[in-house]
Image 1 (spheres, one colour):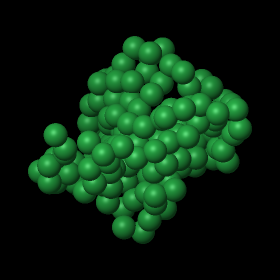
Image 2 (cartoon, one colour; image 1 turned 120 degrees about the vertical axis):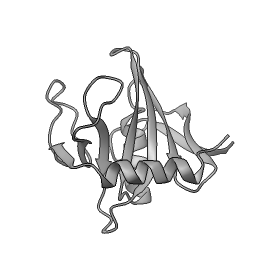
Image 3 (cartoon, helix red, strand yellow; image 1 turned 60 degrees about the vertical axis):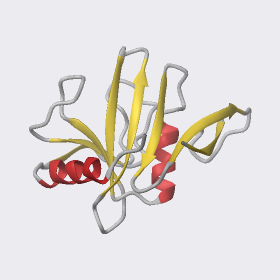
Length: 144
């Protein structure tokens, strides 16, 4: 089963009715893990509630058309939670960067679901060489 147009329209309405608060701009360090640098603007939708009790998380990319174009579903064993993160205005490279950011630790894994596609990005293997973000794994598309 794939997200229907109504799912994406509901996300569009939620984002349109909310204020995006960027509390971790691109290039800033994570407050508890300073070695982790945010590759894109990261924040939340004000006056919303996610599974962890704070606002729904968003990654905001560089596309002029700031529309919802993907989501990340993430499981974090350390925090013992799962969350959905909304990607807004992200290029394909930025989507992969977000995907890789949420899959570079053994304790955190996620899947990327693109709007209008029947593909999910998954990790297929770990390799000793690093990519441009310092991650050491490869990804591939898998049709559902």
